[in-house]
Image 1 (cartoon, rainbow, N blue to C red):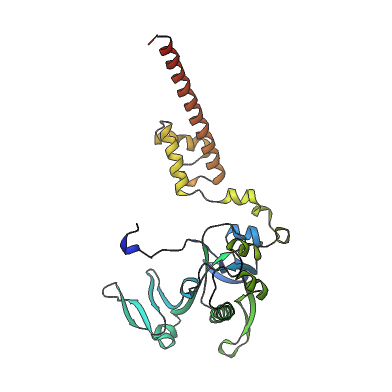
Image 2 (cartoon, one colour):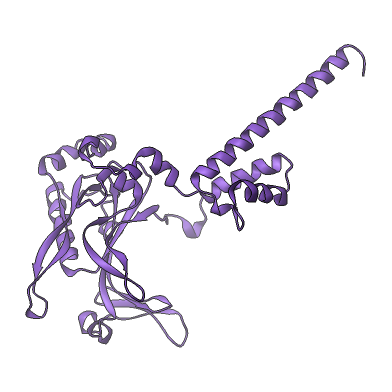
Length: 317
């Protein structure tokens, strides 16, 4: 039974972020720069290539608030989110109490909006078809045109499917669009959400497994760099806390002290600060060595048991 306060409440696993920009080094510091492709985690690049401009996606829910929440948001320099509103009502931090309070949201009439301190931000949550991970990726955008484009794609799809969005195959892409800020023409890259109508209609009668195969990219069509092949991909995955716990359990079963094992890590892998420094390759070697020792320990214990059993049978003890 769940805790009563938590009943019906859950957080969908977010397994990573996909971005529309990347940090570049300037003379003094790093700064964000917009790009014309998706900046993806390594497991997505392994399927769609190093700089994909299109992703085949689907959603986990029909609820727009779950898949594409969008609000006016203002962040403090060191305090994180300080105000979040929908154009009518906002939750803002009271500077005197430090607590969030419900206030009127003035939207584009807000002084902070006019000072460019408040922005409209949409957070798109989606499953990437062809990437075998449990959870959703998040893409954040403050682009007015991107938000309108995605809203339009979702609205049109809901009209065709009678409100269904979950497990419908979509195409999310980055496209050039001409805008006129302050009367000056320029080209920016924005999001567009589309769908193959035939595949969309087919998905309404299909199972989830069939849907996840509809938009799966063909491996031969993807240009995968050498460092994104399966072996390199696995070796690049960080060691998790649960895996480290399992390692230390094995160390304790071998009756090794922490100091002894840390010395072993220093001598063999030059790990001085923490076992968290272990790379995937090093960790796998350590676990293989521990397994060998445990197997040897188990075999020796069985031999001792056999000796005792034999002695008992001969009446020696």
